[in-house]
Image (cartoon, rainbow, N blue to C red):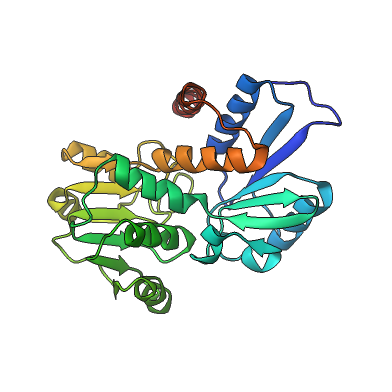
Length: 275
């Protein structure tokens, strides 16, 4: 890690429940590349003031996590196509006080569906209606999925997410889904639902593939149940890694090698599991 000085470039993350994942991943890449940069996670007391601080202090970039992915939009100068098309933001890039928002969650999910060979013919249920759910549903539509149900307690938000892409909304998960995707904070460490499952064990047992966007803990209640049932699993750590690489490139203009990415991911996982 370089010695901090007046020329050190700062990047941050904004989340209600910050994790160390981004901090570990980005800082490890900075260290490998010999860059005078540093990354720090924050839980903002006031989102508008936090974004003003990005602009006013010359903070180069910011990751945006739950629950700020939609709330941050009015505070940004420009939306890149990835954020504008979805109506959700997970990345802010600051160019001399001009803030542009991107969504790297979307591209990460598209890539994971491809690399895990998840068939678009699968009957799919996505639980959630917030910013991450928007990115997931958009990625499913882009990847050719046709039979998708968005499950959300908020009917208005759930219908909006589903019908934007020609899918349907339901208040509860019906049995028979072959691909289950959790795009809610259920199972996330530090919350009141950290021990809960977003789907029943019977639904997990009936599925072929289980995809959980929650990255902390590394093994969530859902991914643990899915592995115990012998299911194919896509994890929130997978999402976090891919979207963070794209963020890193947007912030720095530097594309790390596959080996550098692997080393940063392994460092992140080892540090998280030993904490």
